[in-house]
Amino acid sequence: MKTGLQQGITADLTWIVDASMVITLGGDARATVFSTPNMILLMERAAREALRPFLEPGEESVGVDVNIRHLAGTGMGDTVVGTAVVTAVEGRRVHFQVECRAGTRLLGQGTHVRAVVPTAKIIENLNSLTPSASAMNLSANPGELPALSTLQVTVRDRIANVVLNRPSALNAVDVRMTGELEQVVAWLAGHAQQVRAVLISGAGRAFCAGDDVRELPAIPLEQARALSLRQAQLYLAFERLPQTIIALVNGDAFGGGCVLACAADLRLACHSARFAMPEIRLGWPPGYGLAQLTALVGKSRALQLCLTGDPISSSQALDWGLINELVPAGQLPARGRQLCERLLQLPAEALRATKQLIHLDEGSQPKVAHRADTEAYIRCLQRPDAIEGLNAFAEKRPPKFTEP
Image (cartoon, rainbow, N blue to C red; front, side, top):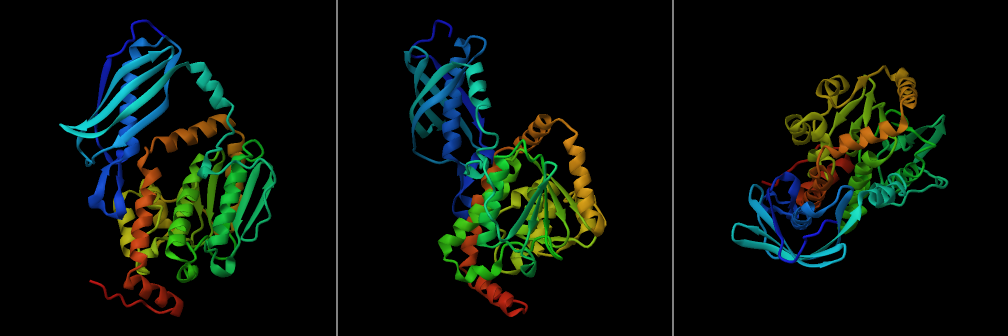
């Protein structure tokens, strides 16, 4: 570290609050505010800027302690300024007083400590980590895959075939399947060398009918919220896996099944497959997956799917960019395996890095938007129209919505 760093050195950093920096409270878009984590990040970045002129080549500063009070809120589009002032220098550890303002209004303040470390040491620590151990906040499982009842998993020549195996329920995802999919994700995270590509398909005539609506009436509200958040995290975890995930959409992909397909890296579909987000017809919005769907088809087409609940054909899905390739039904497994074998001939680390970088470039908002999705879903689930939707589903009749 260079000499000259002393108490009183100050740095400011200015941001315009955009969609990647906010959180929506209570599922109400009117309560969209600059989030606490991003406010803290702004102040930490200001401290980093204060240290930058004093770093030698091959050095970087990292945060080691932060103590912040969030005092006030501000909205999207506002200008916020983070300020960091050096208060003490203890060898390679530097103490700061930090604050964040929007105009004259104080949003947050506190203390922050950064350590100056060699960049090579950071790289060494990162290389020692298990690949994708952070997927879905589960520890990677390097051992055997537990016994499964709702999924079938086979591995041959470093290609895993994962089959959703509830054909009588059109492979709807229930609580048990959710837990087993989490187990498979953890197992894949721990087998980056043994498994290079994954094919996901459905048993029988459907790919996946979505979440199992028949379970909902018996699930307490808080459990329904927790389950929706688990499912959102499950599908977001796909992008952090080291393998290339390919969905073979062999039939209808509705609701959560459509989200499952969207979560894959590539999607092949047969001519008879259909895609839909039909939750609105039951009385609630999708509980998760809106960001992933919108990233593939754009806002206008995502609105069409979610506001009408109408299904689209596989040829329309191809035109919209929802799928990558249209394949005759009988050739779908062979085409999926052919694509996997082609991927196996390419450099493994380059494939993993490419997948990671493309998902990283989406920004942070798709990683947190599902929380607002879930809250809106839970709020609507308690209303009379949702109760009518569930009753109509159970009785196999059209619902009669009455709320204004």
